[in-house]
Length: 266
Image (cartoon, rainbow, N blue to C red; front, side):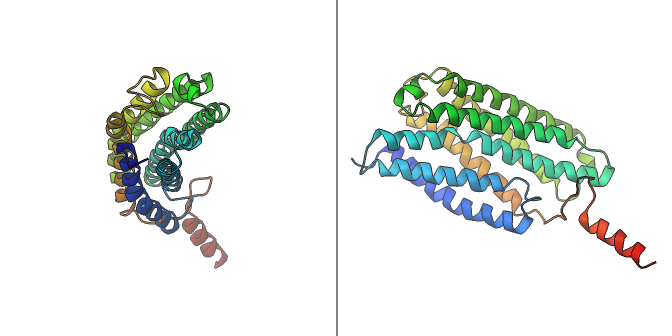
């Protein structure tokens, strides 16, 4: 079996996502896991895409149904990490608002967003793995459809949180405004990716199908969107500075240490 159009896309994914994986890992190391603005999800997302691309390229020598399904499964779980990434970036901007004004969006709302996104991911994976056949992609189980419905709600909540932070942009700290711009752009791009997923799962056709759909449509509505979101977020991430970890009461560890030192010296 020779190199096909779809295999060429997999090669492009490796070219883009392999360096992005290492760059994201560097950002997590530089910014810290707790204050990395969600870049840990870029690590997991790019790793998933690398595995999926390798499975697709492996079909050149071994065109088995198992490899095709493995590649399709990796391709189907891309929305959750991207939304979690944007959520992490907004959460960092929200902490900036809390430090400057003392009043910010409740962390519980960000927790709810993460919970919805993870629930969507779990349902999708369960729906796919319990019936890893071609039929599962042509006639998705209710778990998969429920997962897509939940991710739509999660995307809508992301947009609401973004709108609130844009409204309070004057309270966002210096150097953190670019987070709002990046998420605003990514939210629109993710919507296109979300629309593609909805068409694939709710009305699979010869055009919209993760297993053997139209490759050009997949490139335009899915792959390029993922490239754009990852590159935009990493570009913004390179401009961010490491922040002191935040305690549950919202205070900086650095400030707490300074106060402790002051009172102990009296």
